[in-house]
Image (cartoon, rainbow, N blue to C red; front, side):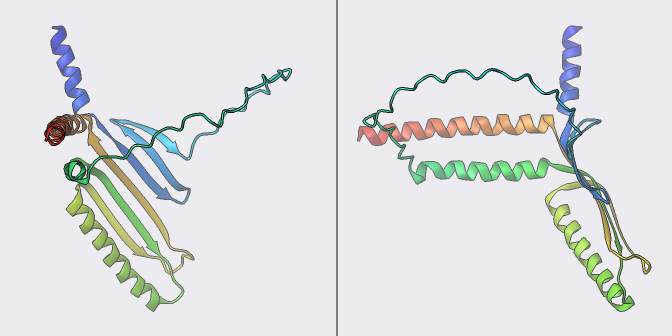
Length: 206
């Protein structure tokens, strides 16, 4: 029975979404951490409690340090590896970023723009430009990520003095997807390291 409970907990952890929530409104930018149903505010930070003034400590006498030895041996700088051995790891890193991008999900994309202008003609022109920019943004994000909920609103307010924007963006990835990527590319990196060591030994033996 215990192994069933353990398996159930592991399955819950595997589908647990982890990510970041970014919001912008009249109060300014806010950034939070997403861990399943929990939201933890990262910015702006909460008010810190005032600390009580510490008691004054009597100054201690500093110990005399021995004079520095100018003739001390300098550390040798590493010369690095060859470009040929490094190139496979560059390709592996790019593949990892590509797979990571496809596994990241946008749970909520909420954008609201209320435009204001003194001239109705300028307001109409800016309204069209705003819709075009929003359409391009959504197209780019849709090609790069999976978007679950999307809500775009652009309106005109002839009585408003300033254009205002509201944005909410929830970006998550499950813990199971992160672990699967780390395991897959970790094994791939170990194989490449072993291959590089074997090839370097062959070169040294020649």
